[in-house]
Length: 209
Image 1 (cartoon, one colour):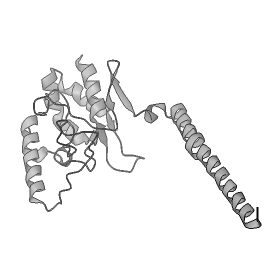
Image 2: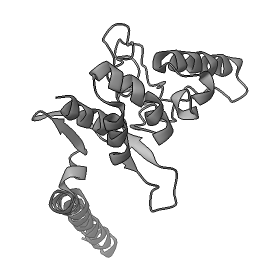
Image 3: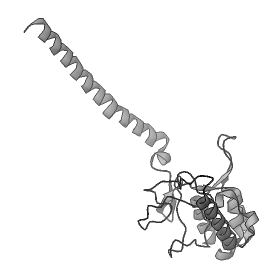
Image 4: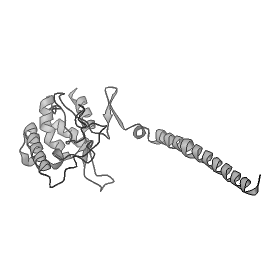
């Protein structure tokens, strides 16, 4: 074998060894290490931040969902409602389809969006028996992902009387529940206070018995 062939063979063997080592390190060791740290230090988050009720998983605190009567996705008055969602693949799953995260992609100047927001404001006001002037922005505007699990404390407060009435509970008790499930700004200064709708409704179910 001449010098050039031996040199090429050594390079090829070096490349194969590097491929083998990197495959083991990045394809086996690193993923297992990340998985192990996640399971040991952040078990709940690593497994989807699941929310349980009655011994069964009812969703994730990271993904919003519908709370409807089951008839054409009509909102159920017994539950706090999330903000609108454009994540609807049109396959019968309705809004908040976790397989179809999406925004409406309508521009702020779109007449379609303007009319949609007006219609939503009218519906939210009628559903909660309040004037349209009291309806907060997040009650009529969908999020960028379409799967936002949180609403503003203002929207939660707007729904309190209706939820209390539908469940036969004192309004003060439901308002206290909302306050207990209101989270502050992230890191103390990012964004605004939020209320996780799923966690609030799970607590409401316990309160209503």
